[in-house]
Image 1 (cartoon, rainbow, N blue to C red):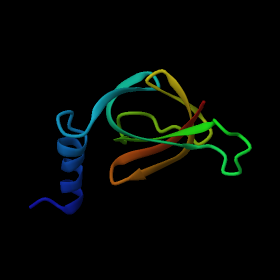
Image 2: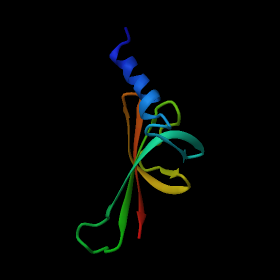
Image 3: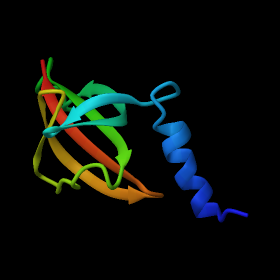
Length: 104
């Protein structure tokens, strides 16, 4: 019988990062990888002094061994668009990268 960790690893590749289920191929840095992108667009400044400036927050879920983990503060290109890495964590075999880009 498989352990819980082995079952989670199977779910990552066979379900969560399955192209036909959730994942898509995206260019992260210089590599094309299967991953899941979660995008959120919010007003960038809560005091209204920068009306019209929005923050495009992007959370990237990718298998930990598919790309080199970026570091906080690094510029990471996602599908050719520059994003500033805000946080990086390893969660159950998945690399979770939160990055931001400003847009008007």
